[in-house]
Length: 246
Image (cartoon, rainbow, N blue to C red):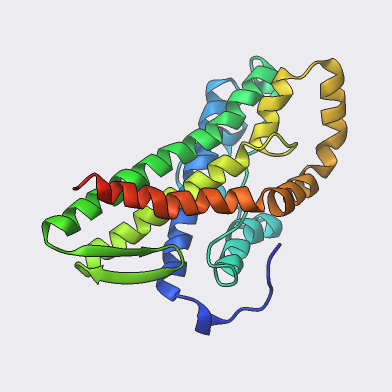
């Protein structure tokens, strides 16, 4: 799932730092969405742990080594090996406290990707604003997903644009991936609600293998569609934004 060798000589440090900032902002939106929805539907577990929040620091369990690695260590490692961060974070949910466990679990699952949608929209709007600002000053941006280029504009505009650009990309990708109908992923909670009794039995039997199934499906079966989605938003959508200025 990752390459262990780290070669800082081939990594754009500015781009890596921007990606990590976006990663932490994103887990705040995603996990905070879960926490708020669970609280609204009757489960105060996340609330009592201080996780009903979009503050990413609240979702880093410093006393849990596995969580600390998954939320902080793994994203840092992968951003310096793959160019962008991969990691995991989660909010504890107690279905027994929900008003309607199956339905409300589906709503809690959907709340995370909805948080990603908010992040993607904010990123896109800020990016378009920076494109407009650069154009008004007869400048231009040089956007690249894995490198930072100042372009023909001020450093401040270039940095904000690069951050917003990555915010849009990471939220689109993580939101889409989390909607996969697989046990242990947000989309799995949604699928479970619509299954009949036999389907739920099979789904529950697959739960212990959810992460393994997720990695196999996302990495080996959906790598090309995910790459196409990334390319579409990294290139085509940005070109469309530039086209709006003509």
